Image 1 (cartoon, rainbow, N blue to C red):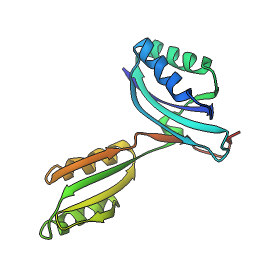
Image 2 (image 1 turned 30 degrees about the vertical axis):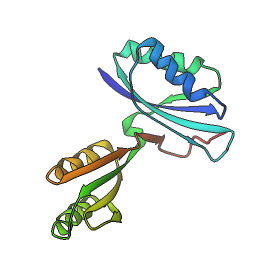
Image 3 (image 1 turned 120 degrees about the vertical axis):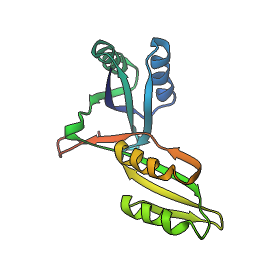
Image 4 (image 1 turned 30 degrees about the horizontal axis):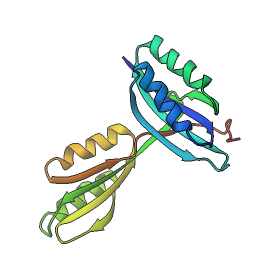
Length: 164
């Protein structure tokens, strides 16, 4: 099995995300991650989809997504020529005695402390998936209360592409 990242530029219209998700559901394809956000042109949204499968299945996914209504462009983003990031929020139980240890790990990974209470801390970390997984592995030594991840978002490197 192979994993790919698709960058899908769509017209910003009602139901487009539902149609994409429906295609994956009907065909039995898996969505590992999906993010969507408006571009600098409010008429368009960029959707980043991470999916996995055999080469033939992935080719079918590319073709079928491209055929959907409101799809402007589908581009596979190769890892070596793309910037891929994810945002992680992590809430950990940390009283005054544990805070220095949590802060030390956060500093190593350049995580930001975004909230502190008497009994917990919330950290924000952005990076590629291996970085986030390494951070989470070290944080397993503490009592993790909650985790929220945005999923992958990505763009190709270079100045060739512009949003419509």
